[in-house]
Length: 150
Image (cartoon, rainbow, N blue to C red; front, side, top):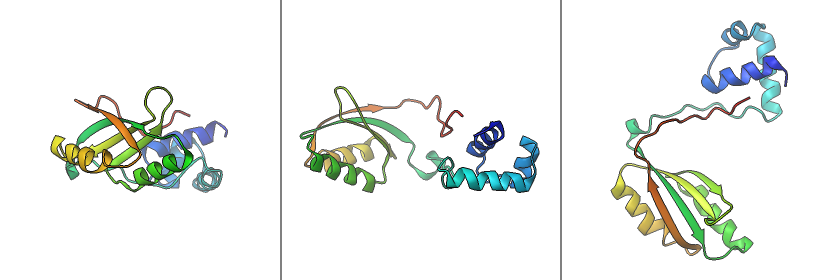
């Protein structure tokens, strides 16, 4: 990636719907050149699909909960089954496999504490692989970005 590609990536992380013409004006290249560069960045795996970010408060999912999970067994099958379950849960926005004391860290988006309690007690803690959890409720979102520094 050269500097123009980096500029394109930075701009597209802020506005994925920007036109090639507007992008060209901002990076000092032609619209056709920007279009080709975008296609190359997509085919190279640098740029993924274009999505729209949703205001979570506006759709009633404003509570952020960070949940740490310890699993009972670290056997491959148990991990794969738990990870497949996580992928199917729409309220789980992010799942990280962790080093250290906890095996996984989940970021869960729910409407309120009651909705999280239902998820935790009826779903997560009922999963056969889960040994224990610890939940942390976000009081305020200070920074949120999907942009990767390039």
